Structure formats: structure tokens, C-alpha cells
Length: 441
Image (cartoon, rainbow, N blue to C red):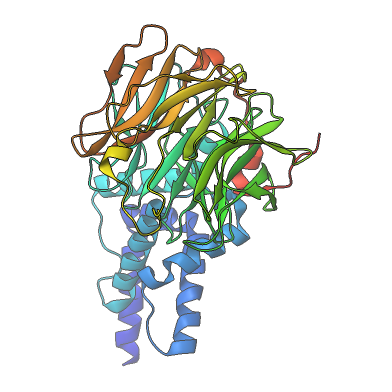
């Protein structure tokens, strides 16, 4: 028995000393912290429940542990981390389960695994020095691949590229003022929450640690703060919160949804919601004083949605259906009448509520998600065509309308033009996935 054990140890040692296997072992050493955390979680689970946990059960716990103990790992995507753990777990199981020792990988397998290690170790560096697009781009959401993903395209609709490529629903994407970051909403961890993505490498990190339903994000003009819709649970009352890059603290601003930060940074346009009467109105709130004022007169019909600002800050664009609904209509349980849906369209108005103009004809249902181009000459909006939502572009001066998408469902366009962007500079605080206190002026 003693000689047999000695032969086993000698055999494993010989395999370990093989040059290719040594190289593989050195690669594992570089990832020892990841493996040790994974192994400790497995051991703890076994002590408590008396059975093997498996990598899929422990994956969420490992991700949270890494984010809590090593902030420089916060940029590692779940897919990359899972691939590393699967490779380590499989290799070590084969090492300890038989006499064969470490598997003999071919040279190309070693190279592939080396590339994987480099991705893991250096992903945070790529987030630190993210690159903004050098030409005008449009962000949008599409379901053409079976689920909602974030895409980019040129202003003429060409070169449509999937950025997220994730099985979750990724929506509500908005460019940062400098164009080097994308803020979007995803349910990839079970709850609709905010995520930050580098448009150059598509590396993703979660913004907040505390679970809550957050969506409809918007950036402050200096790129240091965000505002968004917040709810404690699905279907609960919605509030608008603001947060600052660098800490986890969130501050309540007002009840409502669909916030849009003014270019001068002093006000946020949003939509109020009154359950009694189902009143939705575009309203401005002063960030410092919390004073609110309606954009359109009180007599104007409700059901105003999705406000956004011109780059100069003197105009607001929004969707509006100014035709009345039936008196007994309840949007929580009733379907919108088709004749009423077809009358929703896009309007533009001065910041003080004057010079209201209709931009888009009442040509179809659900004309929403309007955004003015940085130069103020074109408008993006979403409209339902033949049963699917599509993105359109309208020239404000000529009235010429161009359909930019035609495959599956597409919506929520957002502009970026480097000619109107803030300068891009390295932001080390992006490695911490935290946001916080609102800066007082």
C-alpha cells in the first residue's frame, strides 16, 4: 500500500514537471485568489449542508465576495469569471480523481487559456481608459436576437452592432456626456437595475450593490452624477433618485419617473403620475430647492411622456396624446383603445412652456422615446409599424422622415456626437462600482 501511494505521488510529480503542464500550472497560480475563494465557498457549503454545491449554485456568492473584498475585480464580467471557474474546477477534479494527473493540453489550448487570464487580469485597466466613439453613433435596444440587447448604429442606420450579447433583457441605454461610458438597465442578476458599460470593449459592471428596481437613467451634464427611477419592488410606487459617482448613497428627489437632466445642471424634467385620474404631466424640478413647475398649462390634456432636452437647454421634446381617454378608463387593467393609441405623437416646446409645436404626424401608435440630435436638426423617436416598434429619424427643418431599423423590435434611441462631447479623461473611481452623495451647489 505504501509503495502504491508513493508511485502515485511520483507519477503526479512527473506530470506536473512536464513543460506544458508547468506552464499551465503557472497560469493557475496567477488565478489562485479566484480559485481559493471558490474552494472556500465549496468547503463552507459542504460543512453546512453535507453535499457538494457545484459552481452554478456558488457563482452569485463568489461574485458578491469578489466585489466586496477586491474592488479591482469589479469589472470582471460574470461570463468571463464563470469560464475561468469552470476550467479550474474541471482541471482540479481530474487532477485529484485518478492516476492521470493534470490533463495534457495542446499548445493551442495553453494559448487560449493564457488569453483568458489576460482578459481577467486586465479588464479593469480597459475600463479605466475607455474610448469614446470618434464618429456620431446612436444607441438603441433591439430584440432581433431573441432577447433585448444594446446596439449601436450610425446616424443613417448602417453598421448595427450588438454590444451586450447577453441572455438577459438589456434596455434603456444612454451615453455619458463624454461618450466613454454607457449606462443601461438589465435584469441579468434577477432584478432590473443599472449597469455601466465600456462601449469600446463592452465590459460591464453593476452600479449599485443594494438590490432595487432602477431604470430610466439619465446623466448630469458633467458626467459625475446620474438620476433614475427607483422602486422598492416591482409594481411599487416610483420615485426619482440622484446619486454621485464614488459612493453608494442615493438621495430622493421627487416622486415620478422618466427623468431627464437639463444641460445647465439645475433642473430635471420628469413625468408626474397621479393614480387618481391617471394624470401624467411633464414637470420641472429644481435640484437645489426641490421646487416644481409644470411645463404645459394645467388645462392641457394629460398623458405626457419621455421628456428630453435640446443640447442648448432652451427646449424640451416629449411624447403626448392630447386626446381624452374614456372617463371610466383604468390603465392598470384596461387596454388602450386603438383609435386613441394612434394619436400619440412627438411635440417640442420652449423651456417656459411657450411655442408648442407638433413634430410628427399622428400616423401610428406609440410614438415615444424622442431625442433631439446634439446639433438640434434631427429627432429620434420610436413608433409601432406593422405590429413592431421601430426607430425613426425626423429632420426638424424639412420634415423628412427616415426609418432606421426594420428587423424585429427596436426602440429607445440615444445620440452621441464627438463634436458636442465632453473631453474624455481617465476616471479611476469607475473601478469601484459605487455611486453616492449629491453634490450641492
